[in-house]
Length: 202
Image (cartoon, rainbow, N blue to C red):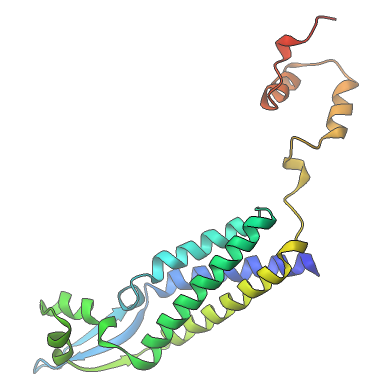
């Protein structure tokens, strides 16, 4: 059960991070300008929420790190996952349901050259949202749940595989003792900080 919880948490965090990165390139809002021609502009997620892409990449990094770190860092990374998920959920909710002018200002300024919140707001006739903000918000809710489960179960997760450890290799040592010391053994000794040239000659 604990192994399954770890697998689900890591997979969910990685999936949510990937969703955020993908969503940052998709159209979140459509703006109709009050310029006489009714020009329409598409606003991608990265423009609506400037921190969307970098924080999504951070989530991906956290998910990958959680699969190999020890107990203390699991709690730290689980807490960071919760904080990022809460922040992104709040920002995404604002864009999805209130469509603030600030989320389209950079796109409008780039298209028209008009700057200033008041001037941009006067230039915007209407703002409508695509399904992407709601889909992404659902991902952040899943990310929140994954962070909670991580904090609740992290102390029971097994550590990384012992085959990668150099301080707990009794079988390897026993096997090495049963045969002549060769060049490979000497390299292994050096990797453990043991200089084979200091050994007495047989």
